Image (cartoon, rainbow, N blue to C red):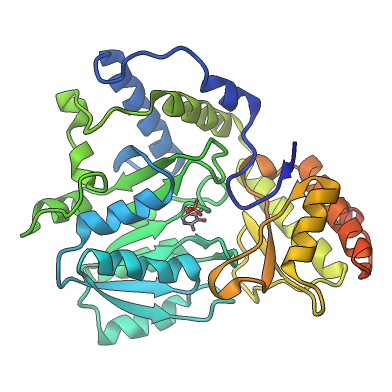
Length: 377
Ligand SMILES: *Cc1c(COP(=O)(O)O)cnc(C)c1O
C-alpha cells in the first residue's frame, strides 16, 4: 500500500473504512435514517460553529461548489469571483454556466487576499448578488482570511460562498462569526472519509435568496432547495448513499474525539515548511501558508514527473503534482486529516530526501531530521 500524502483524497482510517461495510436499511423508508442523517448534519454544524442548515449531498466536493452557484445564480446576475488561486478562478466557470456575469477580483497567487484592497475595490463596485472565495486554495496551499472577507462582504450586502473543501477540520472555521452564507466541504480532505460526499452549510439568507428567484433553478441535482424540507416531509430528493453516510459519521466522530486536531495540523505544517527550507527547497508561497498543504517549487533541472514517480515507485509514497497554471511548477505534500501524523510525515520526508539524492541532487540536510528538530522546538 502507498503512503498517501496527497492533498486529498487523504488516508482513511480503518474504523471509517469498516463503517462502510455494516449492514444498512432502506434510507427512503426507514424513519430512523432521517434522524440519523439530521444528527450527522448537526454534528457537522457543531464542528464549524454554526446553527445554519447543513446538508450532505451525494457527490464529490465539486458538487457543492456547483450547487451553490446553480442555486443562487439567475441569468444576468453579477457575481464577484475572488481569485488568488486556481480553485478561486474556477468559480467563474460555474457562474457563467448558470448565466451569471462573473467579475473577478484577481490578486497575487503567492499571498492571501488583502482585505483592505478588497474593501477599496468594493467601495467602487459592490453591486453583486454574491461573491465566491476559497478558504485554502489547494494547488498553492494559500489560506485566505474568510472571517475578514465574509464580514466585509456582509457589510456591502453581498452573500458569500466559501469553498473550504481543503480547509475545514484542518483549519479553524466559525461559520456564524464569519457570516458565511454557503460553506462547501468535501468528505475526502481533512475529514479523511472516502471520496464521494459534499457538505453544505447554508444560511437562511441564502435560502431566502434562492426562494425569491424570478426564474427556477436550472438543475435538479445541484438544487439546494430540494433538501430544504427533507426532515419535515421525511423525503429526500433521491436515495441517500447510506453506507457512505455511515462511514462519514465515523470520520466525524474521529474528528470530535481528536481534541488536538487543529494544533497538530499547525505544528506539522510549520515543521514541514521549516524542514523544506533548511534542506534548500523553495516554497511556492510568499505568505498565507495553510496548515493543510504545502506547495514546493520544482528545482531547476528537475521535473515534477521525476520527483513524483521516483518517490512513488521506489518508496511507495504518493505526493501531489499540480495542474492548470501550476502544472509542472510545483509538487505538493498534503498534511491534512489522517495524513497529519508525525509518523507518516517522517516516512514521506525521509523518502523525499532519498529521492533527491537518487536524482543526483542531494539536499542540504535530511528532511526527516530537520522536521523532528523543528517539531520539538
Ligand atoms: C479537493 C478540492 C475540491 C474538490 O475537488 P476535487 O475534484 O476533489 O479535486 C474543491 N475545492 C478545493 C479547494 C479542493 O481542494
